[in-house]
Length: 245
Image 1 (cartoon, one colour):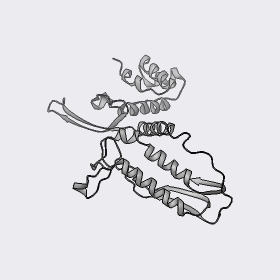
Image 2: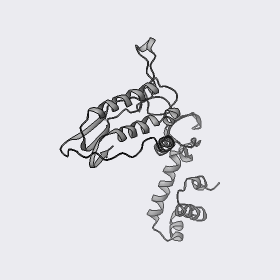
Image 3: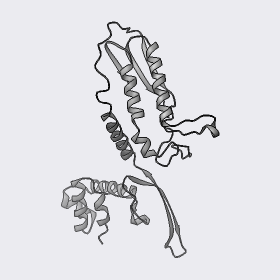
Image 4: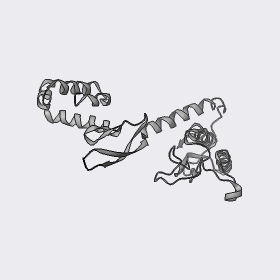
């Protein structure tokens, strides 16, 4: 097999595919660059980018990486055991979910959750008075949505439903006592979710107790979407007021 054939699935643009075709047809990189009408260094840079993309997906035969990752995952690290003859005896591959795919999953969950939110609130009249010198702040510090606790073990129960109820109750109370201001700020200070991935661990890999699985927590993003939007709908704003999230 041509030494560039394995890179073809990782060419992200038509131009990159043309470069690989030229490399396959020519004996040298210099000849391929001349055929393409580009500088040799530019072709080498493009080839390096394609190889890096392939390596992130687990394919780099020159480094004995020949097993591709599952869709939506990329290689985090590899460890290879070689025998005395230089052959690969064992290999360990660590993978991680692609950030882009995780973000797309969250965005899709939010969009799905918002379908049930349409028509819940009717348009309201704008308050007749406001205060430009004040800023109403609704601050969420470490809600840890998705955390799970059992009362007989931890002292009190806690799960997604309780977290959502607590967050909405607190927001409603704050809105009732807040003044009518020109601007309102809803601030999420971090740790909105208890776990950071489908493995139910923190970013550094510490295991945590989670109420159901990560994908289901994502599908319950009405906790995030509805809670934020409920807060936004309730937050008092004056004439021409603005809400910052």
